Length: 177
Image (tube, rainbow, N blue to C red; front, side):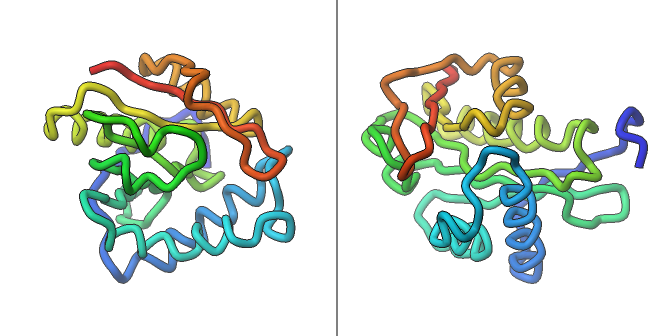
């Protein structure tokens, strides 16, 4: 696939029949990140990714998918309208008037066409609709493409949100709305 061509990307809430496909996609994406812990190193994290559909059961939480022109799932993200549901380490779950973004991933063959940005922007729009004053997310050194995209969207590093996930440094960002 030519990543320089802009393909239409549609974002919507996940359907139950897409839970397994998105879980597999996210496991593949995260396991393929150079410098990110492997499934053997952090099996609980990969179990969480594989079971991404379970996030739809949490209060004020939505799983969004990006679809290609044929309607196939090419990426996804979890949006948290209530930071108490966010489930990360550090202080993020105590943030008020905030929405959160976690577990964004796009299939390798569809990177560079705007799917990740479309997913992040959909979450930002949901946060605005909810009346929240900020959006919070975390990323790692292994996720430099996402890190760059978040900064381009206006997210700023927030050292107060940083934490360690076992031996992995995780870096906090926030976007004031």
